[in-house]
Image (cartoon, rainbow, N blue to C red; front, side, top):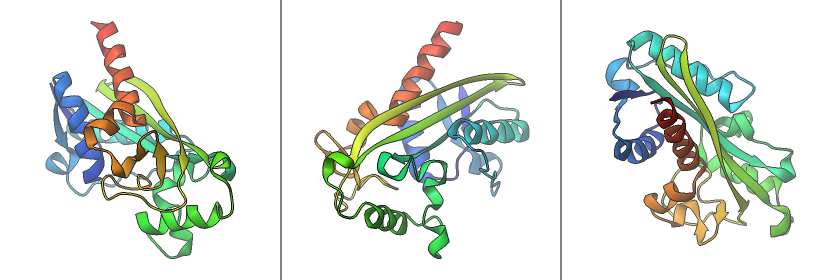
Length: 197
């Protein structure tokens, strides 16, 4: 089945494709079918934002559409940056800048020991199969925030997010998929879709 990935983020598209294609889906970027569309992510939850993106791109294409909204929630920051993860440092003059976002997290957590640097990545998935036909789920991955960036793989907060074996940016894409928030959410999605058959 051909599925439109409602994202303009090349890194996220790569991960969605890597996880969904072995499940039998042909993942196509929204840029291939309706280029230049920017859906405003103004929801108060990850799931609201994922649903908004999936529904909007489905309405424009008429094709099954999957969207992910994800982010980092740091306990010592009362769950921030949360739904504002991609634009966490925008108030400091940076626009969707991964390095600036990471610097801000490190600054806010300065002096905190590792046991107080608990965090989780959250991924909410909304899959629109047809008009009014949505399948939705959420996945998480628990970890800690490092004291400095580690590794060159991944994107976003990956260099700061520590799991067993190192940061997300020090492990392979396949290893990350096995334990990540997005991988966990998409495996839940597969179970939900299988249950519908």
